Each structure stands twice: as structure tokens, then as C-alpha cells.
Length: 257
Image 1 (tube, rainbow, N blue to C red):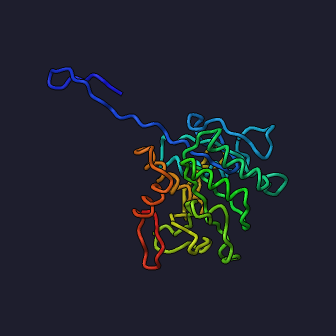
Image 2: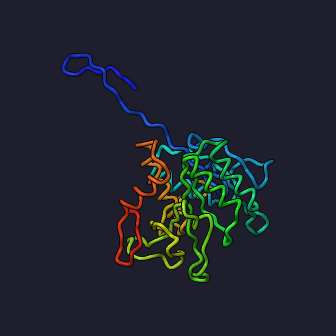
Image 3: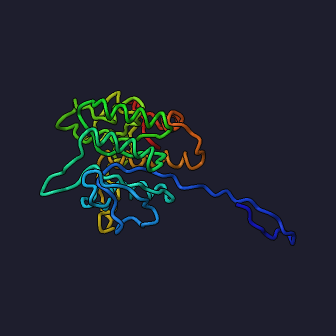
């Protein structure tokens, strides 16, 4: 954008660089407009019940979006509802629909990054292929590693464990140790703070929470900042930049600074 400015009595043309906001697909429970300003929310879809809109009724997707927005104030979100709270339990779309959501985030909604804070224990071909498709189309997928280490340390979650997905675990507030609840192992690429994280609730109130979902949100925000500076970065380049800039602890894990 070009603007006219008076410098030392001389009218000069000054060029200001304006950057387009990064479009982030949030595959989750939706986003509450009471918590997140509508200017940051693009048209999405409720895949669990297409007769409903993408307004959050549970709070998880809203919390994830709030963490990203704090670190990436210009972000725009596409809420894609995969989960919802119904009659005391969480309902989730089936595997093929979940895979289609990833593809639609790329082809229909033009997302540049996809944040996924849900996971499956089993490797499903349709989801594996959808993740590979996103990579092929230049879209980075960031996924949380899971919070079941205490009860199921052997669990490996997908899509986080797929090779091209940036898998994120949680470390404590001091970023010195892996959180007790966080999954870990060679399949987890990077860790970020996931304890004592300030989130927004459905109503827009603030509270503290924990989980690898918020660790993933922080990594998504950092990837968005890199992409905002250079929209031509490929998913491979984004992963490499994030991992190269991360701090490596004595234990060998890499932690987002």
C-alpha cells in the first residue's frame, strides 16, 4: 500500500507492507461468537449436524481459537465442527467424514493451516490420505499429541502421528519438563507449554486450563506468524523452521521458545 507523507517539507511516497491474515481451519467443536469477535470468524460448517451452524456448544474449539488469537491477532478462523456435547457425552463424526473435513478445509475453505486437537488411536486410511492431500496442496496440519499418558502411555494418536503432521505435546509452565498428562515418544515432533494456559470460555470469560490442545494452538499460532511473513513457505519449510528454532532440552525433546 502506498501513502503520501511529508518528510522534511518534501512530499514523499512511503510504502507500507500490509499482510493478509492467515486462514486457519479449526477442526473441533466450533467457535463461540460471544468469545471470539465475528471479524475473526469465516463461514464454516457443522459436519456432525449440517442443519446446525458452527457455533460452539461445548467450549473446546473456542478455547483453542482464543489461544491462537492471543499469539496471532490477525488470524481468521474457519470453524469446522467435528465434535459436540450431547446428552452428557461427546459425539464425533465418523472417520470418512473427518477425512472429508480435512479435504474441505483445503479445497472449499482455503485454509493455510489446519489445527486438529482431537485424535484417534487407530490409523485410518481415509484420514491418512486426507492428511497427505493437505500436504500436497501446501497446507500445514498441526495436531495435539493427546492427554492420556497417565492411563495410556502406550497410546499413539492419529492424525498427530502421521509423518507430515506437526505433532505437539505439552511441557510445564517453565518449559523444562513434559507435562504428566502429555503423550510422548519419537512420533511427537515438538512440545509447547500446555499448563496454566489462559483460555476463553463460551461466554468470553477467562480461565486457566491445560492440555496438548493448547500446546498445539501455540504452535499453530507460531506457524501462522511465519506464514504471514512469507506466504510462500511450504509445510515442510514451516516444520523445519519451527523445529530449528525450538530449544532442545537435555532429554532430547524440542520445545517451542
